[in-house]
Image 1 (cartoon, one colour):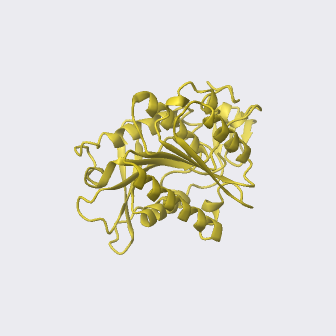
Image 2 (cartoon, helix red, strand yellow):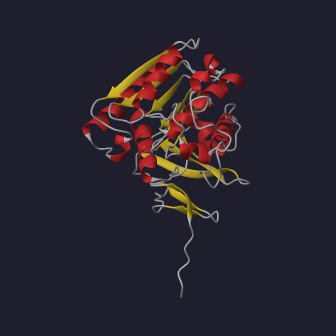
Image 3 (cartoon, helix red, strand yellow):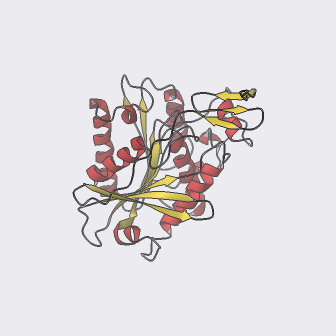
Amino acid sequence: MASITTEIAHDFSPYFRVHKDGRIERFGKPQFIPTSDDPKSPVRSKDVVIFPETAVSVRLFLPTAAAPNQKLPLLIYVHGGAFCVGSASSPKFHHFVASLVADAKIVAVSVDYRLAPDHPLPIAYEDSWDALKWVFSHSDGAGAEPWLNDHADFGRVFVGGESAGANIANNLAIRAGIDGLKFLGLILIHPYFGGKVCDKLYKYMCPSSSGVDDDPRLNPAVDPGLPNMACERVIFCLAEKDWLVERGREYYEALGKSGWGGEREIMETEGEGHGFHLLDPNCEKAMALMKQLVIREENMVKKGRLGLVVGGGGRR
């Protein structure tokens, strides 16, 4: 039998390549970890489809020791993976969020947005925005999900993630400010932002983007909504050897000059690269980063009662 071969139109290794006949060939096999309701585990988890028409879902995390109706700070987490790989059930993202929930004694919602290029950007941003609104539909205690009704303190909300997820989380915070939502803080771990050289992968995944820093999603410094960003505090978690570290530093400086009235802080890990805390979560510096995140979450909770957004890892 003759083998079938097609020409390659775009090669975006190590993520995927696109054949001229339109077929998308992904590299690597997705990994998944199941949810757990084991009473001996420090954290319970479950998946909830929040929009059946698009199959967008979230993974919820709750400390097993939480008392009935005990209100806890809430983390909304956006996973990374270059906008095109990973999920809320990927082992590295699941374990990272579960560890935060166990150590910081918080409730967490990890967003499982649809991936590019099958679902071109900005779909991941829109899915995450819809998930954020779904979460806040529980703020009166009458939403569809009991864990959020019973345990989420909507005066102490956090949004965050790393890399591509940090980029989406930052966009959520700006968009939320326009809509009048407020958070206690935004946590950007090894955030992905664009530069002056066209990012061909991003531009392919987001046909409406220029792929350079005149796009507000790639460079929030040019977003007119930045001065009204929803959060009171932004924490930048950078890594010295991350190829994106300079873009993170540049955004830190631009945020300070934007007219936004909140506080900002940089934590930079020496000698480490992009996503090191996901690749080796048990190393000394990864555990130190986790400890610092917990301390800062606790400090923000002590200072005020509002909310926060965090974003996820991978190349971006």
